[in-house]
Length: 297
Image (cartoon, rainbow, N blue to C red):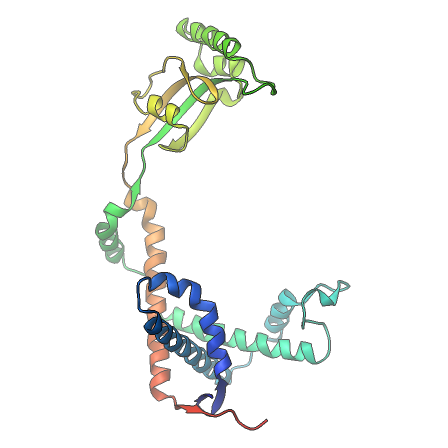
């Protein structure tokens, strides 16, 4: 059994293959659903996907506008093995004979379908500024930026176990205590960091990072400081630290200007998906689709 779609027979095997493809994602979405009902719905959705793809392909193939030869060759070059390489690396794909002809046909169909979709997308207008602002206001509470710190540090790593080049705890503590005395005497933090830190270079700068990225001991000390303040010596699993907080951004909504481009792409995709869905609905309304037996071989 299968489907007869505008006179073209589509075997049930195509629906089974579609069901196998979407099954993992589908099962995640229908957790708790009766297994029998879930299987029936999976089959219905798979059948609809196959019907829609077939209708879209049929429409694309019926378009009399030819494809540019250069476009076809470029697309084929992208999927063919390189000249001189082992042609058997990709089963069924060769540079000559019937396989190449079949590949060319598949490529042309794909390019024609892409062209249909591109024409639909071209008719979709870009989101208005008003739409972007409304989406931002509606989802503002979900678009939170974590607390961020701009900091530098001096660290002396402590040897763990018998092996390793790091110092013992006493040795590391002695070095970082010396670094602290230099800081207290007015030596710039970056200079002391480059002289004494196990991670020397760049003045000990860590740049900007969110709360939770560093180890807990580091976060607890650093995010309790005021901008411009320096910590006392403290210990983490890695060794001894002195941290300097340059700037702090509190947790809060991401500014509109920083998410504007993302919102624009999100809304545009939704509009394009709807345009394609409406187009497929129109094709479906005009199509002749019936259940059918496979034609004789």
